[in-house]
Image (cartoon, rainbow, N blue to C red):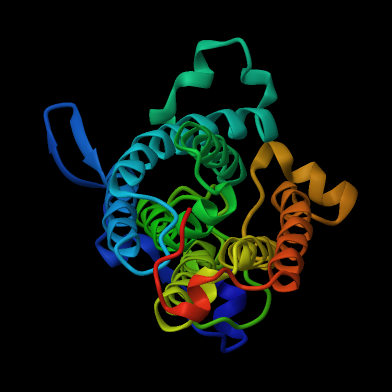
Length: 291
């Protein structure tokens, strides 16, 4: 393959190991502080910090004590929902075995994490008599940048790489964990940029620079559509999990793409609901809105 690329004048691929990356920050004996764990921790702390700033702006549907509760329960939702979603959607044979609890071996589902966070939001909203949809808006703004950190950690780990490159692509990479050693798309960076950075900047700008937060459902609807579309597009570049490759062959779409289609549909429905209703009173009066 590499000789064919060279003969055709194609750009030489980049070798991941030449980038000087390693999956951990430091190690002491058998213990390693891995960047993937740091990405989860930093993403959650960054989201909590930004949420605490958001609720000080006019129109907040919650108080700081509610943000504190959300920090705790959403963390549980991300971890438990992400792992259980991975087992349910991708590895159902792990149900009932100890392997389903081995988080350190990898395997988290974004869609499962979303479900876990929705359950956490529902619990906090019910206990605090809060507007569930508006809390979803506030949480949604903080998810993409945390997601970006996770995908960057995947790249640093040299995992979840893309499909083999077809044609000439200047940033094709060869990952050491690839048994075929083919030039592949760095799909982790595509996801970090599209579903993470771009979507995060858009949602943050809409929150702080417009009155989008006064239309319940608008921000979470945009988030859901953006994540669904971004995931659907990026799955064309991401290598399917080996045990799910048959899904692509049989249906033409990956498991991640099939899971993204209902996300897009739900997001569009929430957007239509948000735009069909008048903005809440705080949007006109410029005063804090009630929960």
